[in-house]
Each structure stands twice: as structure tokens, then as C-alpha cells.
Length: 80
Image (cartoon, rainbow, N blue to C red; front, side, top):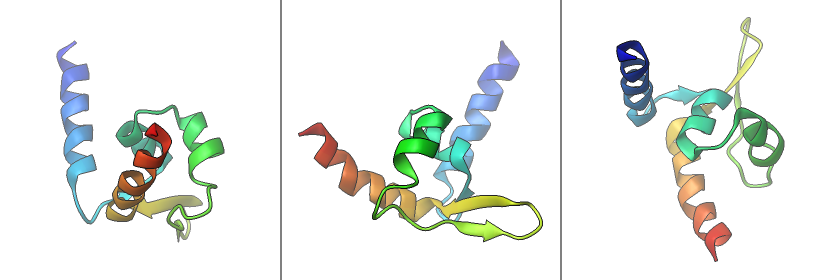
């Protein structure tokens, strides 16, 4: 149980770093969505920040601050 809480604290600290590069798991945690929702409904939306392709890892990463800005501007539209 303590390990789970520690993992949650570490994740939250990572999400708060302004210069962080986020993967889809990080975006899902920040938006409180499933990874599947992020993959199918969020990252492919027009206007969502473009990913940075990390060579050799095969993974995509997004600039945290751009994702946060997108969420602020697009979140309010979804609530109306």
C-alpha cells in the first residue's frame, strides 16, 4: 500500500515538471482518462500538440506545457 502511494507521489511530481516530455500514460494520468482514450480520442485530434519522435525508442513524447495549454483551452469547450 505504501508503495502505491509513493508511486502516485512520484507520478504527480513528474507531471508537474514544466519541461517534461510526456508519453501517452502521462497524458492519461493528467487528463484522468484511460490510455486507450488518449490513443483513440485525444492525441489524434486536430489542434493537439504534435509529438516528438524519440529515435531508437520508437516512442512518441509530447511537451508537457503544450499538452496542459491544450487541455485548458479544449477542456472548457467540452464542459459546455
